[in-house]
Length: 146
Image 1: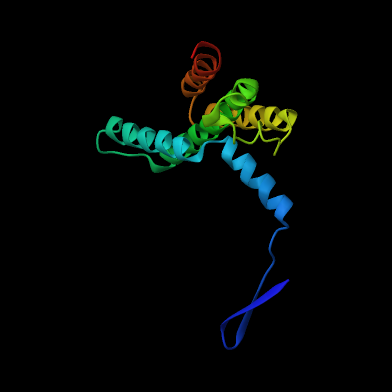
Image 2 (image 1 turned 135 degrees about the horizontal axis):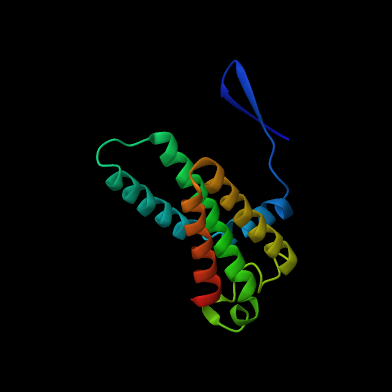
């Protein structure tokens, strides 16, 4: 445990995660393709606001964006699970978490399924069933048609 003093009177204790845990967390985050997920969430927010015609329901926006972020992250993870053998042969994708064995394929599969199911439940409960249905179409389209 390291102790840092930010103010002469208030010590702050910071506990660093062991390298193995940090590497695992980083690998799970990498599976979600955070930059792509961010762009998807950003464009979804723009579309939501434009579709609101000046009267944005911020709670509905928040719930939609949470569901979309979870869905994008889950689909990205499942896509890497499905393409892990091909990724191991391509120079561009060779350093991803599954080809490098930073994570076991079953871990990626479980994580991707959990994120995707959580996303669909969130969208169905906190937005509406139509949005959740569109989510299912994105899952099918991206994982099985693209």
